[in-house]
Each structure stands twice: as C-alpha cells, then as structure tokens.
Length: 236
Ligand SMILES: [Zn+2]
Image (cartoon, rainbow, N blue to C red; front, side):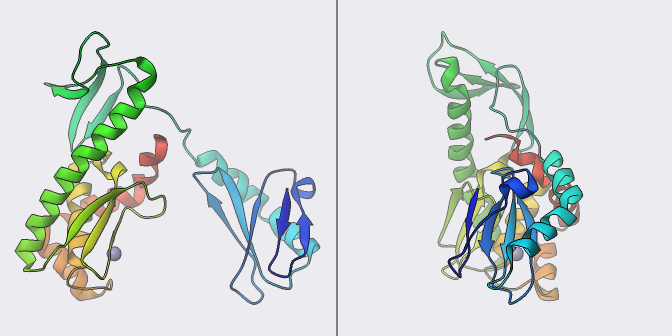
C-alpha cells in the first residue's frame, strides 16, 4: 500500500509490516498514533509531518500485538437473516421471511414479517428499522424537549460510524439507526443525552443533572452503550 504524507513523500510500509494499513497525516508535531477503523477493519496510523519511514514502521511493529488483538475483537459483519432474533425498540422479534405475502415489513405478535425475495430481506429490514426509528426517536425526543422547555427543530436518522447521536447548534438531533437495536434503557438514555444538549452544549455537571432529570435511570443505559455499543455494528 502506498502512503502519502503532507510532505508529499510516499512510503510503502505494507511489505514491511505485512498487512494493509491506512496512513493519515497527523496534526501533532511529533507524535505517531494508531487507531482501528472498525468499519474498514484496518489499522490507521497518524504520522506527523517530519516522520521517517523507518520510525513509522518501527512504531507499527511495536504495537503489532495491540493491532492484531483489536482486529480480532471486531465482530464479523452480517445481514439480517430469516429466523434470527433481534431486539427492536426493546421488543424481541423473530425475523420471519414470508415470500408469498405482500405488504413489505410488518410486526405480527413476536414476529417481524418480511415479504419479497430473500435477496432483499436485509435491505427491507434495515429500511423498515430506519423508518420506524425516525418516527419513534422523533416522538421521544420531542416529548423530552417539551419537558425541558426547549425547542427541537428536527430529528434525522443517520448511519454514523463514530457517534450514536449528535445535537447541532440549530437544535437538530441526529441518531444512528442502530440504536433502535439497543435495549430500551439505552434508547431512552441516548435520547435524554442528546435532548439535554439543547440546553447544555457541554458535558458539565449541569448537563448530567439535566440528563438525570429527563431519565433518572440513565446510568444503566449509558453503561450498556459503553460496554456493548460495538455489538450494534454487527449488521452492515
Ligand atoms: Zn454529548
């Protein structure tokens, strides 16, 4: 793999380290740093402007155990499949492929029924979750905003990789659709968190106090997300 630095020099360290690696320029003057891009399943090396190829290779090799361990820990990505159980807005549902029927995707007791061809099942389930998430998350967030006496201009559902939610200065909130697959406590916690940002733009003591006012059991949902949030990335 060829790597380009801000200085314009090109390093080829794939051979030297024996694996693919993404190299990006670092804002730091002298510090090298590594992280794992869990979506691409690849290590990312941030290289300062005047770093030699040798130093970059050595740094990666020194951290190879950590890289390999981190890559192994990324769950395999999969599609939604017929017969598997998912948690949707806190309700356990079994995905049930109904090719003979019409009607898209619908819930029947404890089943999430999906019509159409098998090759479209994953896409249909995902689209359904996104659509429902838009409705449900807008409802919850509007209610919380009202409780807080703040104006919420809108809610969007995104496929963000790095954040579960975000609140803009224009009072617009974005959520990742994957949160729909988390336990209800986590959904409620995240909504309380983002809505609390309508009032406090930081993570100060006042902010957390506000979260607790909106959702007193927030801690449980918060801890689940911290510990298990990565598992929500299993679906592609
Ligand atoms: Zn926040």
